[in-house]
Length: 360
Image 1: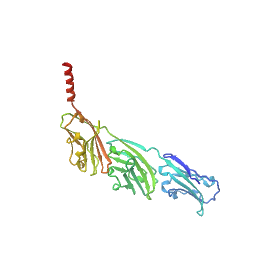
Image 2: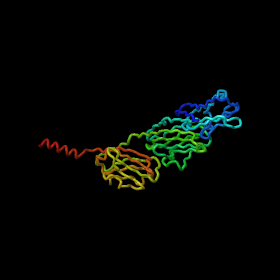
Image 3: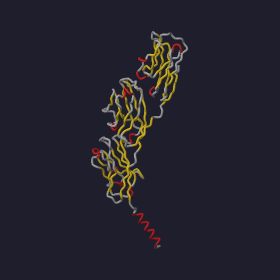
Image 4: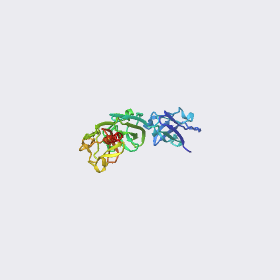
């Protein structure tokens, strides 16, 4: 027979997997609902058998009282998750273990829009929430990953504790993530992300696996890190130089590329640092010989730029971006530079026009 199909949205309190029969059955039967090799619900000897269920389904399933009398073996599944999608099979056995009846239901749990968390750059930390039922198997693995645009492992929790030395954790997140103690007992798998940067924006997905690597639970959270007010630097034309400040707060890997660009009112490469040295050949001609950074910026974390021989046309928004060896953006900062002064050429032209008016 064609399997029945049931669709429901994530977040619904419960869903009914229907199975009604017309045939008379013997009194001694065993009813098993299964999903992905796991026992979802067991009914035997006139009673439900919660001790025979897989741990992840305990307290979440229900059948009608006296299903033999009502001929209704439908199953109610509560506290729905995306990972509950799949093929459910209900099998009815006699006392000798022979199959009397069987029905297959395909359950489709549709995802809701990911929860959105907004925070301003510079905040000390943000919490990506994920609270679920505490009735989980003793041995589980929890993985938080950044899943949109780029795939990076953000945090791992296994065997009852965080795994800070996990070699798969992306370098940019090391020392910046934390889960609550005793997450398994409380069912709280929320993640604290510290030292926030604009580049932390994205979709984070938490997946819980059992000891056999089967997915038990999953949740996605969209993090939006808003840029704080762009730093302003003002200077008077004629000054020898100006400093565009940028001190990185996070530990940076050794193989990074640093690019200072003019991003408004036009796009120009102001300064480039790569493979441990400055790259003057990659600068726009207008800035050659006019820029300077601190020596050994990786050690000091000071990526500030000194701009010399100032001109009125240097006013604009300067953006410094740091990339890792794979070209992924690690952090970014913008500085608005305002060079005050008079436009001498404009004054000269104005004086010429006035002279012509006075002495035609």
